[in-house]
Image (cartoon, rainbow, N blue to C red; front, side):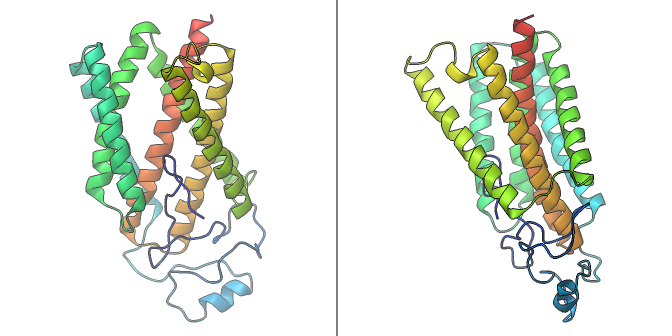
Length: 288
């Protein structure tokens, strides 16, 4: 099962650079014997690993010093998010609020999307692509954050706090086992996410051709707030997929360089949540 934010095809972790199925490793609160689990550890070199897993034993990563750890994921994620933050700060500081800066932000967002698409379809992580995506995404976020702040003072700060709150709550719910990332869960969520993106694309076309006024479904009224909340919930859904892929990668001893894929996925998801949170803060501020 694949997942991704912009293209819904982010790869999971597997020894042959294919796609690992969900629930290949036990999550907190999971019972063994999941029908969706892959048979055996895709990274294990132990010939008895598959037999052990069939008897309910937890998966064991091969003994190697070059496998992904949580520290690797944290470090790469901090690096990628740091590049986003630096790009945003520079764009906010150096680019005044104007139609020209908005055009530059759209251009940066398109470049970031292209880089993200290229990385999503690559079989191995590319540090240059991932950091390039982060830099251009940072420029985009810096410009739009400044624009929102100029009209709704403090909106970016509130959006950052909201993003942290959503991320922390999602992690807490995931680790407590209240959400089980099964193959069925992933399929249903991805179908809903693709339907949401399709509806938003149609809405954009209707607005562009003057059929829908005031942004249509993305207005700054109650309807826009409902759509924004749905988008944030979808962002939380993507976070659970990210957490599961990271957990699987560590449990199965994924190569260390695949920590960059984890950082890439987390960054895309957090950007998604932040942008939607920024809009939601603006909507509520406009209706005060």
